[in-house]
Amino acid sequence: MSSRRKAVAEVQQPPKRGRGRPPRISREEVIATSLGILAHTEVEEFKIKTLAAELGTTSMAIYNYFDSRDDLLEAISDEICG
Image (cartoon, rainbow, N blue to C red; front, top):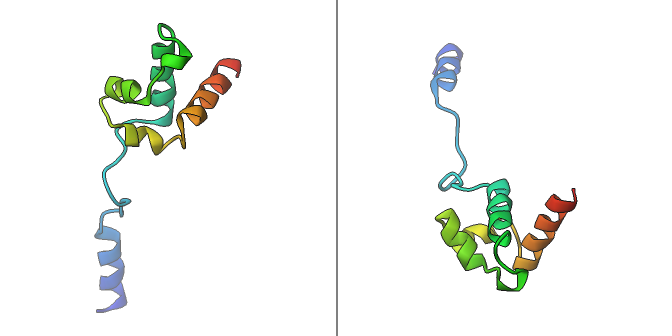
């Protein structure tokens, strides 16, 4: 293939995407939804499963952003205290 054809072929290819599906939720959405739940729920009663249901996702999707429930609660605390 000539260098001109190769250059044209490279330009016409669509950009590569990462593997898997794009995320349906963001870290910020997780924190914001958590704050909403905690507005009417005691911290001791706060469950990742409830949060996931509210976001329309799975518990494992939450753990893509936070290592544990405590890690999420710390991020929420940081958000509040700023």
